[in-house]
Image (cartoon, rainbow, N blue to C red; front, top):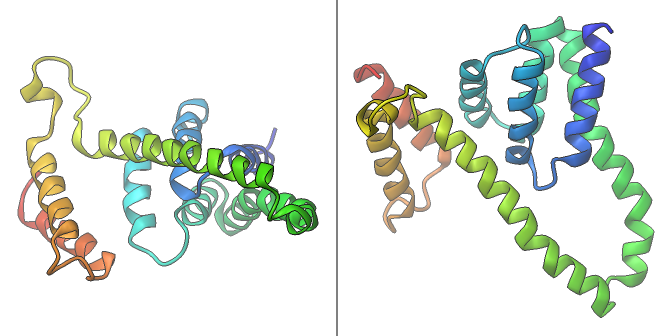
Length: 188
């Protein structure tokens, strides 16, 4: 099968089952890096997440465009992006009228109340995957070789800054830029 058809298949599947937004596409992308190693490695995936998070637009769409472009140039970027978005557009168009009719129905409200924690769990799992890629070295041995302590310290510092009242309203790009500056100054 051609790379373009594989992109359609893989990203349509990710778009169909990655409930919860861009971070929910990460497990699908991680599997893609294993099933299509010529496309990208796990390390490249971590870099793609960093690039996608620092550019405007939804993470999943940015990642699909990046992977598609890497695999098959401009046509690949377009195909991967459209394939990721298509399932959501189709599903929303199909269920819109039904949801409008039953939006105040207690059963429908209960379904959405149950969906929220499920989706939150999926997003948290995807966030943990990003954390593992950023902080764990993957080298076996002791805790000192398994963890990139500089990366963990940077993570903790930036996380604390995002929660601090005086910096809470700052744009996320500033925190990403701070991480990039630290990366330039400190060898990881």
